[in-house]
Length: 113
Image 1 (cartoon, rainbow, N blue to C red):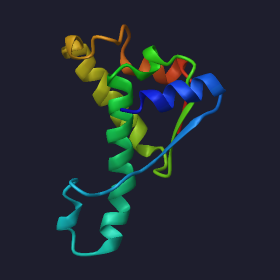
Image 2: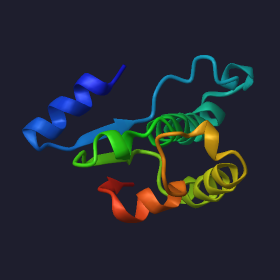
Image 3: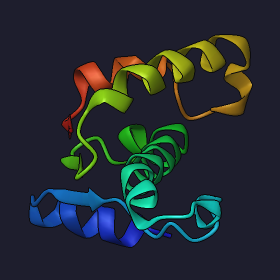
């Protein structure tokens, strides 16, 4: 659903910044205090956005797109890259648009954290 945004950003040569998201539906409503939700919501939402962008072939389909995943620090990136590479190795047919392991796109594409 974000393809038109990505296309416009590439055409205009401007970056896209992704900021967290709603915590609705993430199970965080089970917490008994706002601070617990606040600790988790940005990192979890960023991982969801990043995983979708990467595994749906965003870097392949929009190679010129400069995209930044912000407001969740960077600690989650290393954990998620290991998981994504592991799953890509085991079931690459689930990501037909990717010809390399996911970490390759982090190293070679304009993706920022």
